[in-house]
Length: 151
Image 1 (cartoon, rainbow, N blue to C red):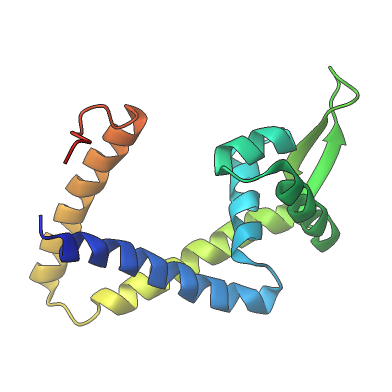
Image 2: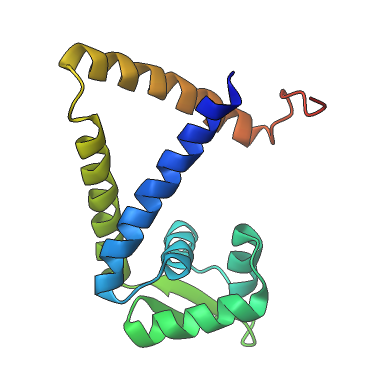
């Protein structure tokens, strides 16, 4: 594959993330905060350490973000029943609404981006994109073991 084309996929993903971040800034939430909310939504009852590991961010940074999210009403920390020293993190209803908001913003951007394509071009592109996505998702689950990393 032409490396420029592969980079274009990455750049489009960055553009949509920036677009969503700019609009979400109006809701007083940053991109790292959105990432933490998303991780907590996906892993209800996770500890800050687990979130830190899943996002590859340092624990102190996660702790600061969680405190901000708690103040903003996106995260509810609860003591663990098994280990009173542990705090488990849960997304609030406000955080669930944020998920819909970010998803809708991203979808709006993609709809705009594809809006100039003819219907047959759009359908062909979306079918191809779906195949690529499923292949990528499967390889991700396999920790990329089928890819030659020596190139």
